[in-house]
Length: 413
Image (cartoon, rainbow, N blue to C red):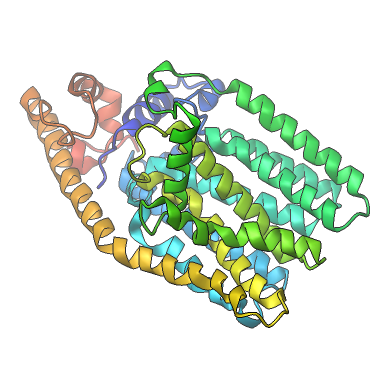
């Protein structure tokens, strides 16, 4: 729906677009914290969307997100084609890739334009890893990789894991190819330092302590629950879904079989695995299920696991039937998505129903100025605080930013 939702009212409307229209926006405002995040690319996209479209419209932003989301699997495939990786049985990763980037499990990111930071972060990571593999010895490529790592850091707090994953790629390359290893290891060390410095800049928000894991056991339980997605909440399921990367990468390094496409997928695997670890800590107390918005961060890791399952049976030459057990990933993966699809669609329909109610209440208030339309139960208005929402809607600039079908007045353009 076109009406803004939740964080969009503050971070996008009141703190970005309103100052832009009133001529008070400062460059530093683009870098301001949003909870633990900087969301710099998302703010730039919001400004660009408004300047082109002339409206503050969630529907437009969500449609732009479709393009961003589609570029990610296209980029993954582009690098694999470049590395001549999609031959033999390795084409079988395509159903996994298609499932991860078309099914509606991440509906929170699909329906809210403000969630573009997830797509930016994954895209920056995939390109950075791909360039690190393609041009491992190039100084120019290292500069671009460094820029992409910095952009990841100012996209989301968990963007600090991008330089760590890229550093891991350089380390793996050095282990496999010993020539010029020192330069790559020094660059990897620099990326680790950058990640450490960025981590120290993340603010500690006391109100979020209620979400964080309080013990190793609580973190472990949440971590395994995340790794068992999309199959279910049972911890033991994590093993076949994420074991191919843990088994195949050491095997390929030991036998000198690690090719560029393997190195590329190893970077994707390390990044998603680290994201799962971070989510398990940050949401360890409340994690009965994996929140929809976080599932996107697991996508490139699950694709990488499918890749390594296929690579292991390809390279493990001994005629032992046991090696094919690793292919259990595929039926588990598709069974999980098939099982959850109807529930995901119900969630989308439920969110849409709430969105219709929210739009009707906001539109009715703007037409009548009767506060009763904002004094509604949770999720019947698109913001958690009705008093704050009323103040925003009473602001003349905010009202003119909204689409005409909501505000009842023409846009600023």
